[in-house]
Image (cartoon, rainbow, N blue to C red; front, side):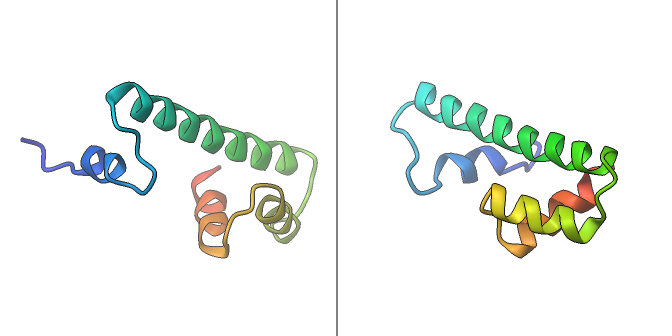
Length: 77
């Protein structure tokens, strides 16, 4: 219908639950984790940290690889 395959891809990820409830629990936890990263970036910016320091801090705090950290920094305004 919409050609959006994100649900199927997420459901087939390694460690996927065997039922919809487990899948939705993981999806919710993933959204909460993303929200924490975004909120942390905003807080660091409000405190006046420069982007290099924020990059280093979120990479360490959330165990992000370089690509993930850069993606978050670009998304959060």
